[in-house]
Image (cartoon, rainbow, N blue to C red; front, side, top):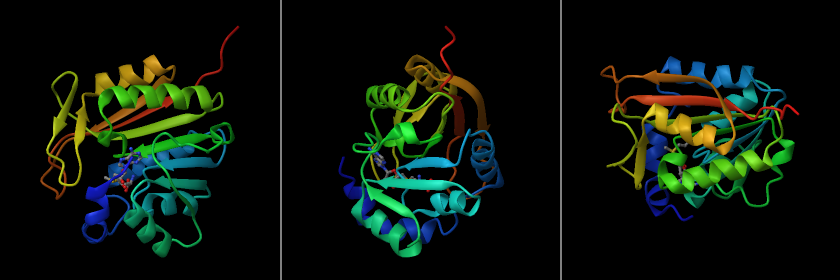
Length: 205
Ligand SMILES: C[S@@+](CC[C@H](N)C(=O)[O-])C[C@H]1O[C@@H](n2cnc3c(N)ncnc32)[C@H](O)[C@@H]1O
């Protein structure tokens, strides 16, 4: 999937978000995810300028970042030359997902229409190994369902926590936890933000 908005605004994005996290809660959510993985191998889907992938690597993770915007990817590679950063989108074509312990999608699945998100989650569930953990972060809403919103860069949807939980559960994952943080006057947070973690459980025969 092309991302012309992110291509055009890549440098502005990097200038606007110099740090991997805009709050300690975001960092805590990613660190809780890392602490729950059965192993160190993580795919960062829509890794943007790579700063969260770098955070994961600093904590001992073996991370592959996947990013559809060539300009975002170029900034990521320039800033983090030691990371494994690849062109691609949420379809994760060509990636052997059976070799990963976790998948992180921070504010990237927001750019897929809801039915595409559901299909992607089903596909990831089929390809990830038992025990793998998924962490999805989205802008959220108190209104039930999924709602388009005026994202500054590209078409985007906000997910009610129960709607995202239903999507991951329908895909076959078991929800582990969810974190909802509300706007508190800090920059960049217009909406509640949702982090939701889920695990692919072993089939009990
Ligand atoms: C808000 S940025 C977040 C970047 C990074 N995940 C982070 O947490 O800093 C959204 C990213 O999702 C990427 N993206 C957009 N559509 C995508 C898709 N279909 N598949 C994967 N990534 C996508 C964009 O190119 C952009 O880099």
